[in-house]
Image (cartoon, rainbow, N blue to C red; front, side):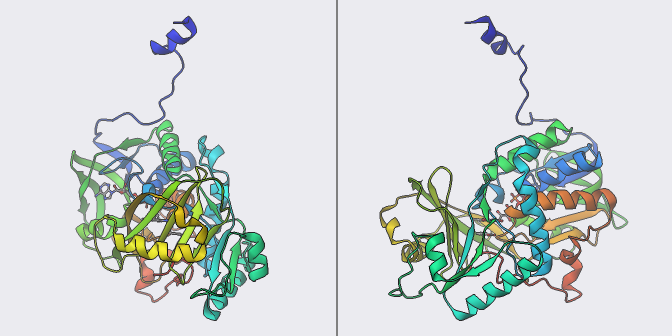
Length: 412
Ligand code: FAD
Ligand code: PYC
């Protein structure tokens, strides 16, 4: 073997670990983050980078990025319905655009344009509303008619001989897709390199509260003391909050998706139909990534159903009959925590120094960078950043909901 190679075999060459080695449990941290999904990891990264808080550990009952982060269909966009939502997701989209260089990893961020089809006058009205709010806040969105739609997506079936003909669409040019696991790994690696511990296979089984203030967490590997704790456990949010004695206005339902075999480039934009409960994009590998509405009943189970697949394919083929011969490769599900207003819950909780990042339903991947940055600010300064204020848990008591039902994702 050439000497130049031998030094690497002997471990003498420069080799930086990409991913954290298993670490022993320490007794105490400044901040503990429960949940090593994109949100928890991004928060840990920003605590270290922006606030020089490096005595941080991220705990996960499974492996990093193995929850909803690994199961989502990676749509990134800012074309929301409310001013609060649009401003929030606009910041995330901006952070996403620079994320590959920020984290020194290829997130495969790919700007495709995002089309929300309208099949009814009511849907067109909502599209105009969203376009108006978006433009007001400097987010590119416009309503397009059938002629423009034909140019933007020539493959789309615009025939009037179908049950729900397409009348027009909301076109959001910055809409994009990215590689979900690269986002999680990128944040994990960048946090780890700044001194953050990432403890996989470490389930949080309880939280230690003294005089209304959190002082640590109980885990499957022992108790850890902490000054501050963030819970970022997506589909398990209510289960953890229940252990602390406060309730979240959340129902948890499975959300399914599937992917085809890779095919040659066919579809550039991301296409969503709320009326037909479907969406589709084509990944860089050529796979068609497809999904629909949430399952109807509350359930903590990530099984896949034939019923979902049949309904989805019926509508996909109405929009793209050319895909009739395509083969499905995989189907899966995640757990969506649905809030009554289809907006997240972020910030402080009734327990002092216990913070929450939850209610991410079907829409949280795109929020990963902004959540990381702003939740870190919230924890480090113990003040809620302006961007997060509308999403406080207290809004449900104050009747100040942020209604995003028309824009959260597909039909519900
Ligand atoms: P997760 O990635 O789920 O991380 C939470 C972690 O907490 C998990 O790893 C879990 O193991 C851990 N955990 C739970 N309980 C405990 C405990 N007691 N102790 C320790 N660890 C614990 N969003 C979009 O923006 N665009 C999309 O296109 C999109 N598509 C989706 C498609 C599907 C099929 C699904 C299911 C979701 C989709 N979403 C989408 C939503 C998105 O996936 C989630 O909102 C987002 O991934 C939430 O990230 P997270 O980091 O909060 O959660
Ligand atoms: O938030 O855009 C979204 C989305 C699409 C599918 C699931 N979530």
